[in-house]
Length: 459
Image (cartoon, rainbow, N blue to C red; front, top):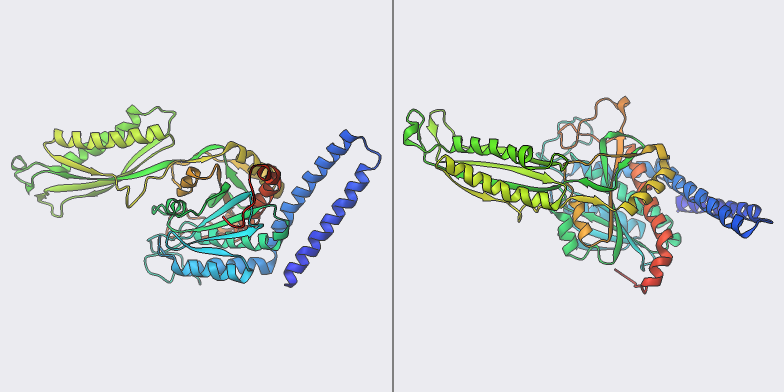
């Protein structure tokens, strides 16, 4: 209560100071000059608001709380659709803040709301799942679960979104609409966003922001771009069958290892010889299983891999040609092949496309908080992100990266490495940035939404 009262007092001083400044600026001015001065004042107030939110998130007690949340999640990593303890932690923290929520969505997901309960609705999202890998970093809060680790930063994402929730709740009376907070399961290949979508988690939402910590972007810097930012992705597996036998008598066999080798070489030509060089695509075979002895040709070989593209047409073409090449090349070597695209277990992810209008908005709001020079363009990545599914139901979506690289801390291991670590100094930037984006969005879109929609009490 003491913290909240102090924040409100500071906010009140800023508000009254702005009012006195406006009165001084408008004395004896022409109508045109009044409009210009008012616009300049509003811009200055907006910039100071973002900076104030960042100062709040950097306060020692606030920061310690976020760090504690993140470390508790890190110690107890849970895989996709198994995030029961993480979901319970999120709900406890929301209860402590007095923020209402609905649960479960997509098994473990949580959807909370802050604001008026009416339109406009704008959303923030954090993914909660960990990776099936053993942590190799020796520190006090190392994963306590063998074979599971938060190696992509989702523990930080949850802590930052809870931080945003706390900030927004402290300013709930100023919100001109409703902020929807999505704590989502199973981003790592499980398509949790798709299931959240199917469960109705994003009904009535008109804009949505997603965030990811970045290991190669400096701390205090944000990076994104309009248009495609991450590729669409799919997975495939193929069983190539021949006739096994003794390795010394290959003429009595039909060798599936030879056939699989021809298949892999031919698959690489799909990008190098069939794709437009300006249309980025990837086909990678990462799995090859066949045989268990030095002197035995096996009956079959299993291969598997992933394919990526930014355009739907390119993605569909790759899928078609992968199957054709595998079956055809196997037949050249007298083998048969069956191809599985595994879409049920590992849903195809569409490309992540950033709305250009939201990009301009993001650059403006982020620039006011961290400085325009710290808002940089990021080249598209061939990695994929299930945040892309939300664009199927939300008119405008935007995804950006939040830097955490500090070279004075030593080398920063990449995402999905067993040596991956989080620079916890990133937490206040994420909490404040997300809160500032949605708060400003509601402020700028309240009148347009009011003219089109009747307020509702709930989503």
